[in-house]
Image (cartoon, rainbow, N blue to C red; front, side):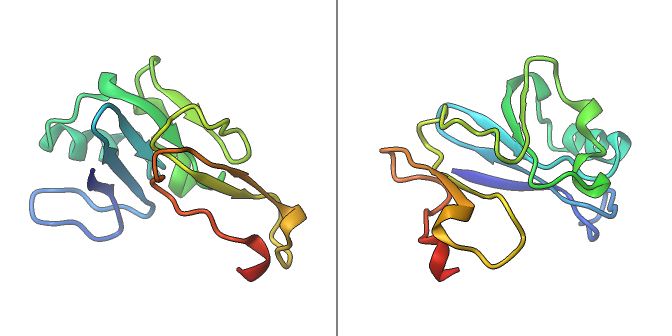
Amino acid sequence: MKLITLYDNQAREKFKAGWGFSCLLKLEEQTILFDTGADVETLAYNARLLEIDKDKISHCFISHDHYDHTGGIGWLSPKTKVVFPNQYKGEISQIDAMVFRSSHKRTNSDCETQQSNAGGLFSSRDCANG
């Protein structure tokens, strides 16, 4: 797996910085984007420098609905499936995700866990211990 930051408030020379976050996860068989930063221009510019083909991004996971994580959605290919919180159905065998339904004190009934048999990219945890 390879993890590449595409959008952040600090950037290396030649790249653009912006308020927000986005990173690309290159798995063996898929490429996944996590969040899109605050704007299309910065995301597209950084992706172009890194020679990232947006048509190869199968999914884009959105952590939460704030502009600094969703503002670049317009850059995505129509082929990319955008997954908002509480929508992930476990369709990627390499990803084990846990979604919290509420910001109050977590209990086992507050979270939904999808597990895969591939070891997972995100580790499942007991919500009550969080």
